[in-house]
Image (tube, rainbow, N blue to C red):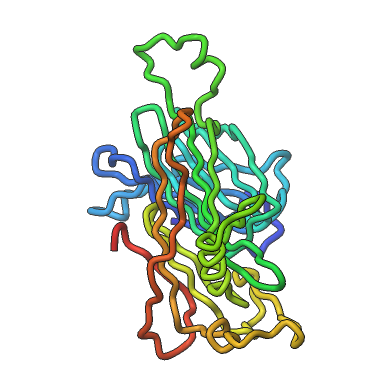
Length: 299
């Protein structure tokens, strides 16, 4: 299956892949392939007979020219395609009818790589996107955060949309919620809360090599303090004057941090539960630095 650029000016390379999570159509799976020119192609793949796989459509940037950094992460649940680019821009596409419509673009200035995204369909008209990423912590460290993005899905053709539905376009963001592992509340707090904050603060790391989620669990993998040159690692150098007695623990590149992500249903009630990102335990066993993670659902 050739993925050559239609813009030219190569060489180009594949930067991300995404398999459609919706039900296969006549045994065929959809596969989204992204290349460094900011183009992407949708293939229809027959696992039983790969030779019958075909190219369904190709999306070219506006004006036929490369626009911005390439896509590094993508998730696909037809007709919704979500991409995350190298400058941490989240783009939502509607691929209904074998056409590509860019419905919305979101940007963050407080989220950093490494990152991971998980997409699920919570109802026939709603998608949930869970995004995990690294966040800076004073004075020169990193922790993990997560954002839940609720996205409007396709409208059933048999139902006439009401006025509220008309105000929300398909494949657009309805609401977002963000939670961090280290989140200092405003104002004053008691001794118990202070001890909890100190425990959270002690888990900050100097470098992060990967952060993965399955939508329920989050795993943070620290990196060596002097990682190879790569944009996928968040790392800062702590001045000697700011070193702490826990520096050997903070610099450990073989200890994984496991968190539980709790995202209750959104509610406008005063008694509604808030989302939580709670530390569970450290995971040991690695004998060398970690290069990447893969997290299976619920495991």
